[in-house]
Length: 433
Image (cartoon, rainbow, N blue to C red; front, side):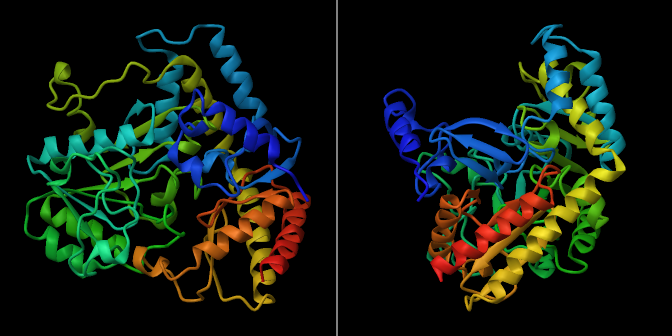
């Protein structure tokens, strides 16, 4: 049996200095316990116990090109030869912004930040500043970062959530400022009638959503839903924001908005933008974006010491240049489809009710239900405890799968890697079943 004892011991030792031995709360939910990683390469992680693990966490999604892609590493090393942080503009930041505007449908202008949470905050501030309205509508199960202003109803129990037609706004953490949520209204996603009834009151500054829901399961919008939301926002003067922190540069070169054919007013990006380097972007209509910076005649402040630094801008340029190559998304989709088909076939023979849905580049596996997952509430039918057991069995067989059910693939997951994964999945499934 594969051992993870060295990781367990080092996490316990590290807790003397690093709270709970981890740098993010989300790392505590990993089964059987958080891992200590020594190095990463392509589709693989190598942990403190010497295990080689096929990785489908991929840094929680960013590593579309696999771990440590040579072209990105080389670009960062070259940029470090020029400096780190200059508190001024560089050609690399301009080039990164140019690439975003060329690839993303809504991106007439761009500003960079350091994290998805940060640029979501900027998007909400901008929407409120431009419209003069305060209310923001978000959806159950959609995650837009950990800030007090938007961490509402990301994973509530059904008792907390209340009626589907009039959900309660549920804080995501103790210590959240209740006042920060006073102007956040929560609705069920994929229901245009519910949204219309709220937005048509004329006081909503912005509607923010994952256009392809990926933090909870992997849920496509219902036919006509996004088009209906776009028309509704146009008619009521409401800013439409797509959170593409997961979907951007993963579902398509231009993100979910390119794939699904609906263009928002603003969009936020992170994760896949720079192959794991800490950069994020707010992009959108020029007339909205130019309201940033009071010094330039706008009305809304946006700032950040680390915005667009040399190494992260270089990583962004190298990553986006790679993702623009025509072959990349074809190979990514082929790898994801091969993996998804193998997993589906294994589950079909297991006798366990299951649901596999999403896109080849990121899909979701649920156990204990075969019903379509259309929103947060329908996702709760899955047996999450059984799925965690499956993930533990997979880890013992050299495959690291995300406990919340999402599977991310990279361009380095070739046929041999996929086939090894499917064989491990079949073996782990037999144990769990």
